[in-house]
Image (cartoon, rainbow, N blue to C red; front, side, top):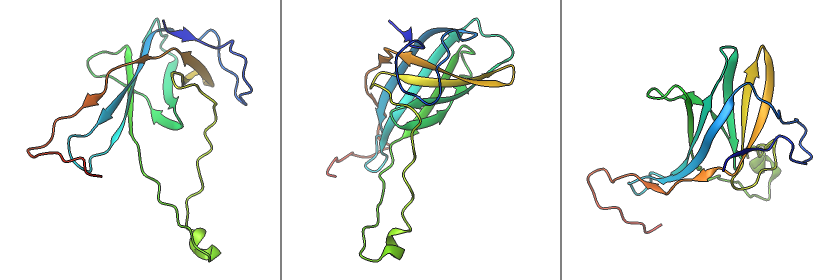
Amino acid sequence: MLACAGGKNNDQAVPFEENPPFTVVSAYYQPWVAGTKNGGKGMHLGVILEEMTEDVRIGEMFFREQVVRARIDQNNPDLFTGSYKEEARDVIMDGESRQEAQNTPPFSFPFELEEDEMVLSYSFRGESYFVLLADLEKRPLLAYPSQGGRYDNDN
């Protein structure tokens, strides 16, 4: 069962909205892997919302240290989706500080979330809000087919 956890006791800098101007019907995450050797892996996210008024704009999905722009599904206007690819991070370790200064500083994720939680941002009448969605459905791994060749997982 999906729960909006607006009343959850946490030390977030941004408070969660307990009564958003829409109803969350369901939310899910689905891991995926590419069908090619170096195609990577990532996550698909989805949220079905109903009873949403015209002055609500859905923004981003915050999930497992990732921020994804929510998009309306072309086939279902109640479904908002997002996807990301997990990127390997190259870090320069060098005795010379000028070399290490080329490293990109780590992104400071604004929320402490459990594995099955997502934060959905939205604006309503010009104000920004965040709602915490808990107990997300985990869908089975989606393995995309290979593109005309054998996939060797030797990495």
